[in-house]
Every structure is written in C-alpha cells, then in structure tokens.
Length: 386
Image 1 (cartoon, rainbow, N blue to C red):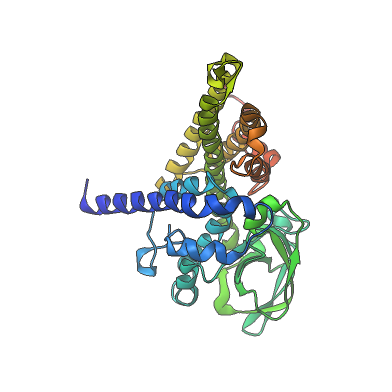
Image 2: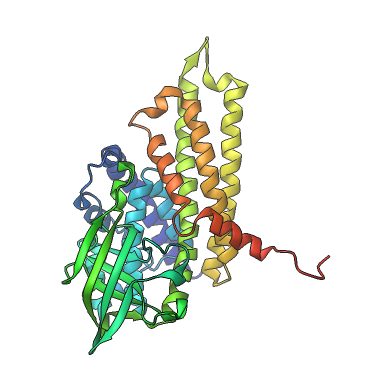
C-alpha cells in the first residue's frame, strides 16, 4: 500500500467514525422530535458542517475530503441508521457542492462551496415537476435567452431541501419539442426576484428532508450561472441519478441493520411465558429472514459502488440494488416491528420513521415500476440467444 493510499484510507476511516459519532450524539436525541415536524435547519446543517459531513466527495483543494463513492456511502449508512431523512437532506446539499466544483470551478465554486461545506448555505437540485418525474423529457420549466442570460419560468415539486435551500440547481428546457437534448442546468439563488417557495404536504416524519417546491416567474440567470449546456445536463443528471439510487439502497439497508440491532437486544431481555423471546423458534426465524435479506441487499449495493468507483456502466446494477433494497426494507422493517410488539412504537426506536422513509425511498430517483422496466430491458429476450 502506498503512502497516498494509506492517507486516503485513514481519512475515510476517520470520517466514517465521525459520522457514527454524529449520528449517536446529535441525530439520535433529535430525530424523534424532528419526525413530529419540529425541525429547524440550523439544528442539522451547521452541526453536520462542523463535523465535516458536507465535505465527503469535494476535492481537497476546495476544502473537501475527496472520498471514494463507496466511502461516501458508508458515511450515509451511519447517518441513515438513525435518521434517513436527515441523511438525505445533507447528501443533497453536499452533492450541489460537488457539482459546482465540477461544472464551474473558477466562478461559482469559489463563491459558494466553502459556505456549503460549513452548512451555512444549503442547496438542492430541482428536477421533478407536477407533470414530470422519472420521464425527464417532459420537463416543462423553460429557460429562454434574455440578453447575456436566461429567464426561467416553471414549477418544481417534491424537491428535497426545498424548504431549507439558499441555492438551487434547476433543470429547464431551452428548446420546446427537443426532449432531453434541450435540457440545461442552471444555478440560482432562492432570494432571486420571481422565486417563490411552494408548500408540499408530506408526513411530518420526513420534515428534516425539507420536501417542498418552487414557482419561478421570470427568474433571471446570467450566463455564468449556466452549469450544463443543453444536452450535457441530461448526461450529468443520469449519472447523478444512478449514484443516488445506489446510496438510497444503502440507506435502506442501514435502516434494517439498525432495526435488527434493536430487535436483537429487545428479544434477549424481554421474557414471555418464562423465557426470553429469542428462545422461541418462530421469533428467531423472523430475525434470520431479515438478516439474510439484508445481506443480499448489501451485496447488490457493494457491486454498484464498485462499478461507480471503477467508472463502469452502473445503470442496471444501481436499479437492481434500489429495487431489492427498498422492497426488502419495506418488508423487513414491518416484520421486525412485529417482533418488537408494542415496544416498537415508542419514540426511542425509529421503526415508524424508517417505515415511512422506506416507502418514500421506493419513489425517489425513479419509481419501482420504472426500475423494473430498466432491468427487464437489460435482460429482454434477444433473437438467436440460446
């Protein structure tokens, strides 16, 4: 192992351990109250920034840790064990910092990245619209040339961090009828004239995710804030979506892992008819099934992470990981909640929050039906095959 590799490994180990400690000392005491709708962005983003959890894949020269994708996923795993919603809020703001460095290293990155890393500036990515979700070609938000810049008009909805965001990456259509080829990406500030936040009614269990929407009415964006030209934006967002599918799958695994830990402890100390629950075969089999399903899901996640870090084609692997992990989490969290009995409904456990999150995860970054079609297309019957 070279010195550079050793340093990278030490840095990753340190950040993962910090994520574990942050989850225990900061998320665990607050998540139950946040899950009842009592959330303030100052309670999450700046503490996470101080812990270095917004620096994950940002390059070293911009103040980041330059972690691999697999190590980023391990950090998110530690956070999601306690609060899936908070982990999603943090990673979405972090991802914008990475985008700014990649697409605008000399203009936007110097202006915004340091504040994004500190958590004093929060960002989000706005793609979904009332009539456009998984089908990116249906985006109706428009970007029309106006002098040296662009005028943006349209509505975005179901956006993570919309409630909190100071800055937004907006995907908009620049040429009617051109489909994905005309989509460009712009970075705008939420205090821009013509920017209006829209409420989206969601379960309070998701409040730390800050889900909401925007209405853009002649929002001006100068040319320096164009992140991706028409056509390039689609390529970028598809790569981002495949990565998101993979870490969402990992976060679903994290929730089941935490549930297994809670159930195992409870089953050993809780007695019924003269013996602990874990002495009953039926109870043990529930746990065994959950543990086996979790292991299978984690192997799919690991394969997708490896492909991403190696620069391989990951579309099918990411789809399979998310398909299996979200379904596994929905099934096994419900089963493990039953293994806990009424105890599982108490605030000290995350079962109810995690069940809500698991169902939400099945819709994020591509619905289950869409991903099934993706996998079916890959393995469709080919004439002449034996």
